[in-house]
Amino acid sequence: MTDLLLYLNAVSPLSPEAADDFLKVFRPKTFAKGELLLREGEVCHYYYYIKSGLTKSCFYNEDKEFIMRFFSENMMFTEFSSYVSQQPSKYMIQALEPTEVLLIKRADIERLRQRHHSIEALFSKLFSGVAMGMMRRISEMLEENATFRYANFLHENRTLAQRISLRDLASYLGITQVSLSRIRASK
Image (tube, rainbow, N blue to C red; front, side, top):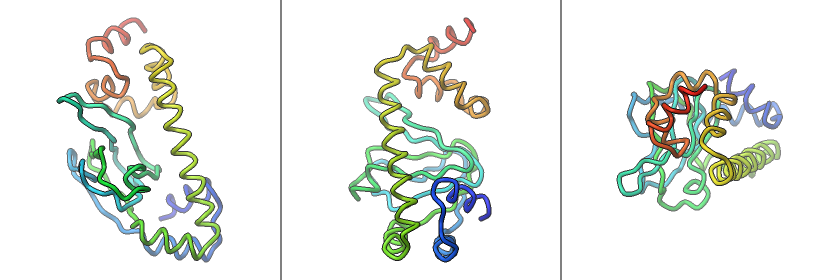
């Protein structure tokens, strides 16, 4: 829980009472490689914090996979659109390796946001970060070429790149594996 508390306080400092109440409602859960944390069509009721492991958020369209994000250790995430709207998700979240998370129910978060201003401030910052990340991802996919996207991914995720299959990396970049191999060979 120490890493989680450090992460939370780095995003937005929590009062000691808020931190204590917040940490009490997180529950540990493990997922095997390939297991789904969230299935397409399910409503997302949780925020997740990854203690160890790696996941991806993705969807399928006409048998083609589109990967939106990867989440690794010391990251807190959710499937944002389903979590906020409480509508069935278009996306799924899948463990890419054995993954241990701490999860917290949406109902617990809402109750704690009402009780503690510092938790309200934390989730305001988390939500803002999600929105900014989505805008950056969309902008990059629309405005930048595949070589730039690959170089940017490596710059921001050097260690993560070693843990992701070439198929998943190509899907994330929006290119074929053949194109990814060409880009990597030219580096």
